[in-house]
Image (cartoon, rainbow, N blue to C red; front, side, top):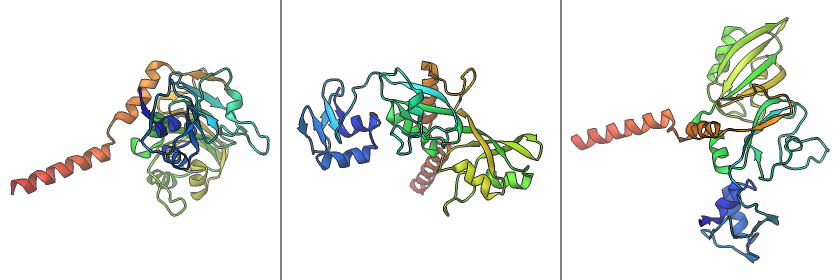
Length: 263
C-alpha cells in the first residue's frame, strides 16, 4: 500500500511529520538510492528502501506497545546521553521493532512509561484534547489543606500560561509529609514538580502509577511487558472519541445554524 513519504518517516519515530516534510524539501531523504524533494511523494514502506537524514527508516513489523516500570535515574530518550547516564532504552532488550517513549518521565521519576512503534497513535495519546489520564503518586513536604488542593485542581499557571484542571487528593499522611494522588490530562516539562512547588509543597518522590487504564500490577521496577490486543484497542478507543468540549461546541453551532435558517 502506498503511503505519503513524510508519514512513513514520522510513523517510524524518527521525527515529526512537519520536520519530515522539511527534510524532504531540503533533499535529505532518499528512496531506493534516489534523492526525493517533492512533497506528496508516496512509497511502499514494505518494499522501498528509505533513508532520512542519513538513517535507514525501518520497515514496519507490526505495531508494538510496551509498558515499562521505569526506575529512577534513567533518562527518557532514545539517544545517547553526553554525560553517560543510562536511558530507558538500556532496559528494552531483544526487540526487533523500533520503539520510542510516548511522552517522558523525568530522570528521577519512576513508574509507568509507555513505549510504542506507532507514532500516530502515540501523538494522539499525548494530545490534551483527548484527556487521556496519567496518574501520579507524589510524596511532598508538608500536608496541603483543602484550599491548596482546590487551587491545584483548578490548574496552575506555568510560564505565564494556564494549565488544565486536574484531580488532586491526599492519599495518606506520613509523619510531617504526605502522599498526594494527582490525575492529569496534559504533560508539560516537570509539570507535577512545578505545580507542587508553586503551592508550597516541594516534591520528595514522584511515581506515575497509571497511563490511561494501564497500571504496574505484577511489573517489578525495571521490567517491561507487551500490551495485549485488548489493551491496545482500549488506547485507540480513548482517542477515537470526540472530546466532550468539541462535541458540545459542534452541537451548539448546529443549533444556532438551524435557528438562523428558521428565521
